[in-house]
Amino acid sequence: MSPHLTALLGLVLCLAQTIHTQEGALPRPSISAEPGTVIPPGSHVTFVCRGPVGVQTFRLEREDRAKYKDTNNVSQASPSESEARFHIDSVSEGNAGLYRCIYSKAPAWSEHSDFLELLVKETSGGPDSPDTELGSSAGTVPGTEASGFDAP
Ligand SMILES: *[C@@H]1O[C@H](CO)[C@@H](O)[C@H](O)[C@H]1NC(C)=O
Image 1 (spheres, protein in one colour):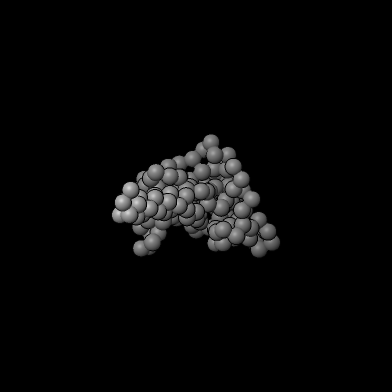
Image 2 (cartoon, protein in one colour):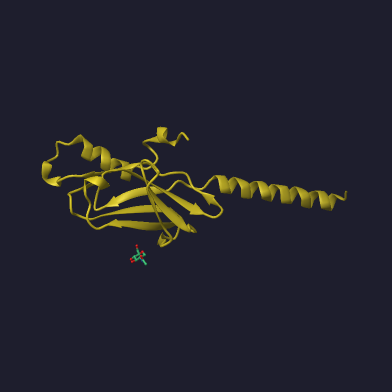
């Protein structure tokens, strides 16, 4: 084998390794809710999933994974981020619970985002609810909470 061929082979192997590594390292998506995570019954809420550019499909999953919504309507949130929005016009008690995002960037699916908890109740209840703080912090501090949920 000529030295040139050996070098070329080495380069190809190195490249393949790089591509493989990148596939395994899709950044985790983030999830947030607008206008917030505590929504009075009958009001609207929008879940926002964010990921890197080049995402084809965003999926919003319920806690049990049996219920989910996919969208290919992906828009550019910033030069390095894409996002999709999932709108609920009128929330009811049945919409309360844990939500998380995942996305597909061919040929792979990403890991899940943190869970975000939607609470359906009147927001005039005052500042004495610990649930309120828990729910909103899940959206603003991605990656710091709920790492235990990642176990397969
Ligand atoms: C796609 O998303 C944008 C921004 O979230 C929204 O304004 C638009 O109505 C959506 N289009 C469709 C076909 O749902």
